[in-house]
Image 1 (cartoon, rainbow, N blue to C red):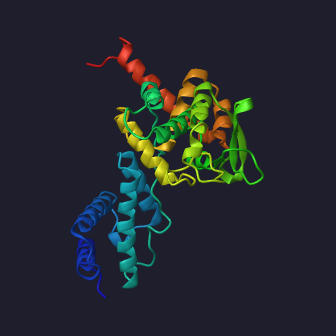
Image 2: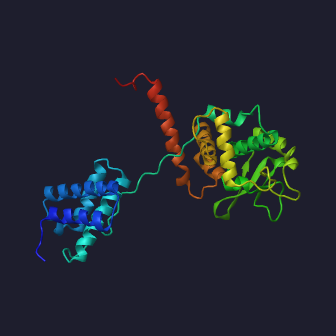
Image 3: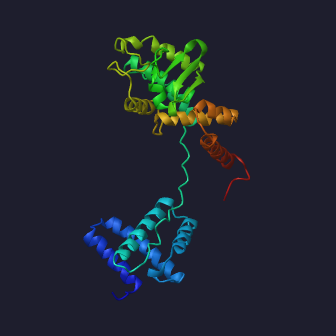
Length: 309
């Protein structure tokens, strides 16, 4: 088969994607942009499209990253290129696929979202004027434990009323400690603050009015059985709206808020690691970035030398 010019290879491949693969117009447009980037790279190097090697692709991916293209967008570009060379390879037009083994740079992990202190306090202190007082007592206790102890959802709903051989976790009010079963079936103990203990006492005083007889779960739904993660998320979302918190609140956000606020006040990263139950301190170090972001905002807003024209 006579060799065709590189632009013809790309044009024919786009027809293949549209007619035979029946890709959506939006996807075709994205692939077209990816191939235009490839054409520009091959012309600037210069190198023929069918003679591109792995080191070329690695260099071009690095250039896209340096230009500020997001990791996900680079992955799409590489996927389009990889498909093009796989298609050319089936016709024997290239000896190897130069994109195989080339991956987009890893995307930076987003910072965990935490509530400002005032919003976290508003959520914890909120008591709706209308509604079921039993559910309010339960939900109030849940918020206090999530924010006050930094528990995961699974750790919270796994709590039983009392300690037993079968209990995944429980709260010992006498020594103000929550004993929970975390990730990897690792047990840990965390202190329970005065506000959470008071909320716990309030919930325990009315829990039997909701719980089925013999139900060991500390937190139960209005059906009397152990609360599920989806039920907890729904109730927390509703409570946040009622409390006037504009941010979408989910249970793990309260764990993030616990860690961030504690680190801002204490600066003790190792202690926060222990309280969260992180096996590796690098997992906890993300909250130092969150704290620095908070400090940066304070600096930019308050320091006279930080103001920009």
